[in-house]
Image 1: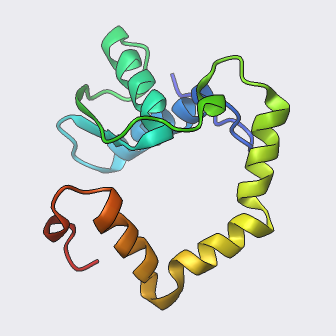
Image 2: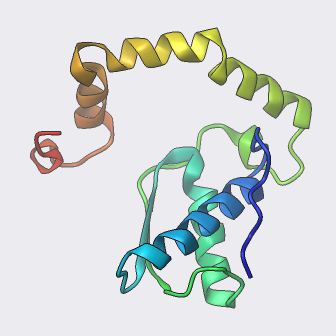
Length: 135
């Protein structure tokens, strides 16, 4: 059974989980995958855990099992994580991140061939910056 994609914006953890398990099922149709390893950072940790839970319970549209879940840091935005989050608060944050402020930040992060993203990743996201490679 295929999961129907939710209309944007995705307001809660289950919306994001539904989108990702659908993407995983679609990917399996065109790729040879033995099992899934999910890597999540920060606020995406609850999504990764929910995907793993669905895999264990057999409630998933993808066929291969989730063999590993890697959580690289604790979530910081609590209001995104609560199942009963205030939809207005989440929608406001979504509008901010997808609006002018979010676009300006993305422009800033991508300028100079993504130098900011590379520096941020080396400093905050990986234990060994040499493991990032050239791209």
